[in-house]
Image 1 (tube, rainbow, N blue to C red):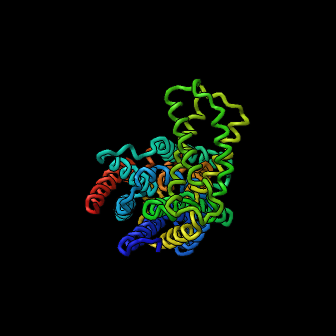
Image 2 (image 1 turned 90 degrees about the vertical axis):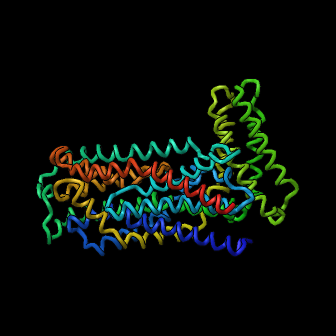
Image 3 (image 1 turned 135 degrees about the horizontal axis):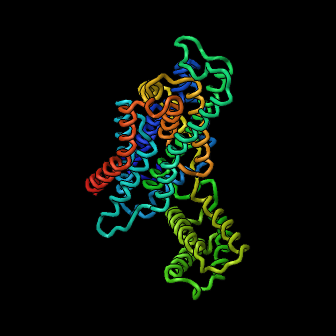
Length: 466
């Protein structure tokens, strides 16, 4: 299978199982946020809520696209890490998965709503930084993408907290039925209209959690496949690489119109690199009339050339010294977008693995986090209005992040939203200071701890595997 030695095939399977385990843990760690409000307001029975949430998580993975998944993949330019020693790829993916799982399970055990997104991203960055420390290695972290991701994860909770306070104010101003602001009856379900709203918000959070967090699992598995079996998964198997030649020609035509004398020294270097990558692709495609004539090992060379070409061209296009017409710029964008369809993909079976793991995980082990969300963030029991407003804001924030291809932390956004609802009810004194401190500590520690843990494991595994 994939032309791998038996021991490498076993390691590949172990890494895939570990990735599914991460999504499984993510299911009961993060999705508890989605069901907490409907359970604590007696809107749905616990077993109905978790099965319903699991179903919509499953659907969300298949409906979310792959923009967030590719954002995860490109945090760690695997093209710079993969070499002739496949065991190095195993060390990379094994370290980052194990570090993320250790942190997730630890915080779940203590009932602390820590972010699976932060754990995975911290683990990826840790591996990249550790690789950069090896002799003769260059930076292996896409810091531009990392900054963009970090900003998205920081803004989400702030907006969640603020928007929930605003929404609670609006509800108090315009909703005359004050029953929604009182503690739910211990055995009776809420009025029908409130019940429908709470079910709808639970559904939306579950769906968008699948579409966003599920994509992170997809990106993780693609990192595994590209890192360990690059010749088979570097390009989309459903597309013929020879079909990108027309787009390549259009990119070359646009680049030929660039006057190097107008550019800065850095832009001139980017232009030289662009021409080098287009020339490399021309060399690979030369004389080929059938995809069968394309050697399997050239697929990874094509991937690497496309991504290097895209990265350098993006920097060049942003230069204020570049004089190209709008038509030329539009032609370049369309061409490079078409070429990226060959590298930015995920097989259907990867989506199925992730969605199943996430869905099953949702139905197991959710009680610890649910109790924290429902009872411990504030000093009072969650009300109908707090549950509905918190989940509505969380669903909107996570959905918007998915639409823009940015990762979002369901845990951070919803925990912040519930904290905002507690503050809106009786002010800042209504928060439980000890639990808020524990959650904040987990938020602050997640990135550095997972970075340190994954980086250390990567260096250890790489040394052991030679």
